[in-house]
Image 1 (cartoon, rainbow, N blue to C red):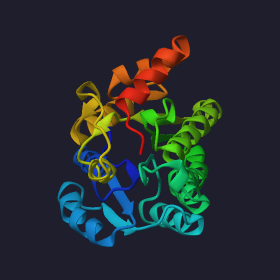
Image 2: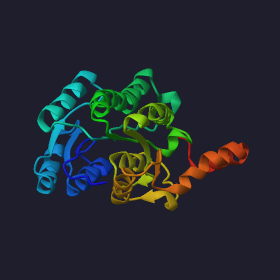
Image 3: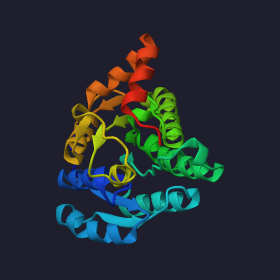
Image 4: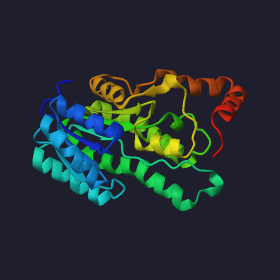
Length: 261
């Protein structure tokens, strides 16, 4: 896809996958609006972003706040005239035992990971449908389709994202708006991965390890492709198959490889 002069909104843009996607979109010629809650990290991103695409900008934003999201989207359209690409990457992950998890913990994860994606999507869709063109990439996780211990809230939020995305994709495709779900594999440089290591979580096998650069390249390639899933670590797709055909073997493997929190 020719990304020159396309306008892209990337959430969770201040670090990891979101930062890399923002930079690569800008390098390809897109006008990028990067949003995240951390104003300081966004300020560090801005010079690099504008050196590649001078009209790009960053805006502090909590995607869980629907009214604030709507204001930012309207600001983008007012300044740039359109919105072509939305990458819903903002998320939080808190690995803990369900016995130590409160209702507030679960609501917070769902409000940001699932609710934030919904807020941004609903704000962007009227513009994309009116244009007759749009690309929405929702960053999910393998635990959304293959849950593991200690990830109840996070896995549920990503499973909800997958179901929501697939449902709306059928309706929006004929209108020129393509919805895709990204499964990035394990990216060690993300803030969530660093926190998981500090918490003593076992690392996934090396065959699902990917860099932020690899994930970003896969996203840019997929923007002009027709598939619903973007599987950066394709071997991850085997897990749901094994779970379906050999559930006892699968559960034993999970218990052996994923220590309880």
